[in-house]
Image 1 (cartoon, one colour):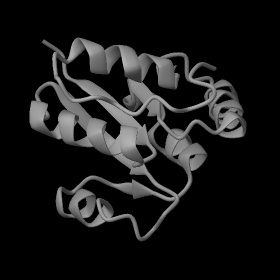
Image 2: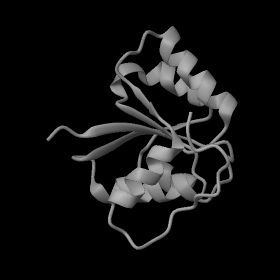
Image 3: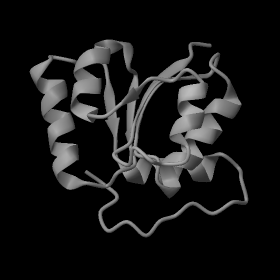
Image 4: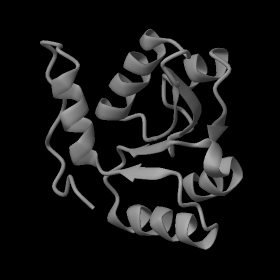
Length: 128
């Protein structure tokens, strides 16, 4: 089976859990191409760096840099203007391969992961 390459945006309560989940699955299933996190002092960033996962300060530049190597952009930031900018970057670079997943899909993925752990669902806008 082909591995899925992911750009993860945001290491808050939701993004951190997905980072850990993806790493536990192994790169043969999910390959994290990069992580974007605004808080440069976030506690998980040192682990991300130690894991050898690139850290991008700007999600739009990450999309432009990684191009169609990225299968999925999982944006857990829930920032509407960022969602717009990400869609525009995909359009401008004519990237018809990469899929931008809204936060609501992360809820679906979490439910499918068969874990008893609850995921934070207090975001106002979980869609596009």
